[in-house]
Amino acid sequence: MEQQSIVRDIERRAKASRISIAELCRRAGISPDTFFKWRKTPRNPDPVGANLHSVEALYRELAKIDAEDAQRLARRGKKAVAA
Image 1 (cartoon, rainbow, N blue to C red):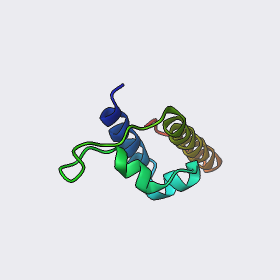
Image 2 (cartoon, one colour):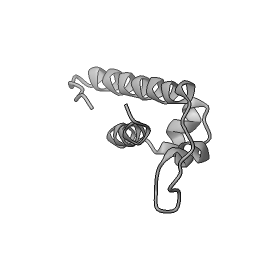
Image 3 (tube, rainbow, N blue to C red):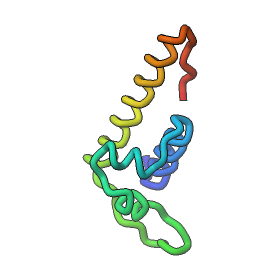
Image 4 (tube, helix red, strand yellow):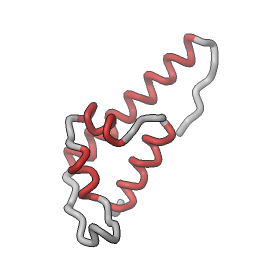
């Protein structure tokens, strides 16, 4: 998967999980500034390459958040909606 696709996917999943990128990064042990340096924007046309360890850490945290949400909903007797 191309880096910008990964960045967009992480942003989409964070939004669906109702967590900010800053909080997600904090939980994954990554500086939010680092994450935003990975994004290609008009102000950042040459983004820094993301390392696999950091990307995996973000996806692990997203999976934990999804599991926490599913548990919370299960306690309320509701079904979780997949992101």
